[in-house]
Length: 125
Image 1: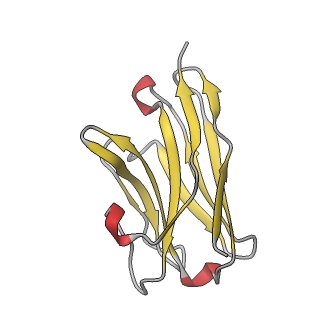
Image 2: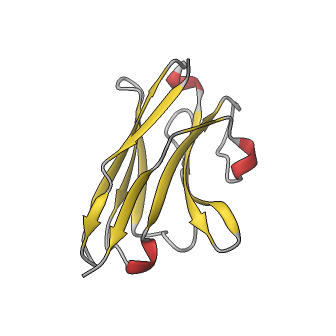
C-alpha cells in the first residue's frame, strides 16, 4: 500500500521559515519523481516544486522561486520542502505527490499517481 505522509506544517510569521517533510512507504522511492502542490486560483492543486528521481534539476513555480527549496533523501524515503521568507499568500495546505515517470520532473497535477493527505501552512502575524 502506497502512503505519502506530510508533516512540518504550522503557523509562522511573515518572513519566517518552515521545512515540510513527506515520508513515503510502499514504493521504491528512488524510482519516483516527486512534487509539491498547493491549492491555487481556479485550481484544486497548483504546482509549487518538483524534483527528479536522482535529485538533480529541480523546478519551481515563479511565485516561490528563490524562497523555496525542494530536496530528497532516498535513503530515508523522504522529500523535503524548505520554505524561507514566507509570505501570507503562501498560506495553504501543501501536498506531496509522486509518479514513476523516468526522466526529468513533472509540473502538472495530472501527471502524479500518488498523493499525501496534506499539511497546513499558515503565514500570519
